[in-house]
View 1 (cartoon, one colour):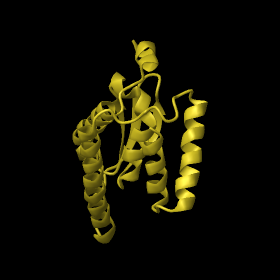
View 2 (cartoon, rainbow, N blue to C red; view 1 turned 135 degrees about the horizontal axis):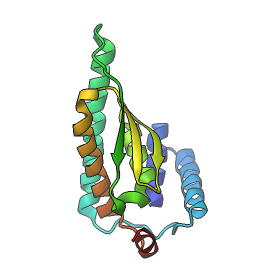
View 3 (spheres, rainbow, N blue to C red; view 1 turned 135 degrees about the vertical axis):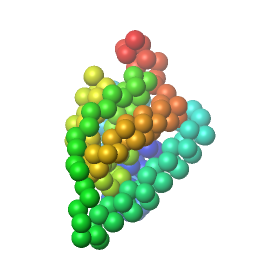
View 4 (cartoon, rainbow, N blue to C red; view 1 turned 180 degrees about the horizontal axis):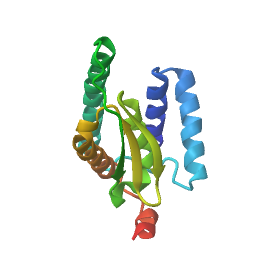
Length: 160
């Protein structure tokens, strides 16, 4: 989990530098200590879901950047903004932070609120007509995250 948080930190700054790696590590360790999570124990259990997840996020970035660029460059405004509530599967509740970062990194969507206890996430969308596709996509991201980073035993017991 620490590595995923550090990677998210560098992605947010759009630069991989020594300063970003160090500050990202400090922030990641601090967040995990505050939340009472194991700092370096959350290694990915399966590499295939991690690779699928990375590939899916890279495709998201390319697609959404193209879509937002089109919106900016064309004189006609094709946006129909919406707020969307999505229920995150229980097996991914412990991964709300990285899921939020992955969604917010992609242009055209932004997480505006999360409710980790209830497992809900509220998104701002630029295109209302893509809401069903967005729900399926977020569920897929959550599924891949949960496969790659399964909940520690203590978290599984609490959510049961």
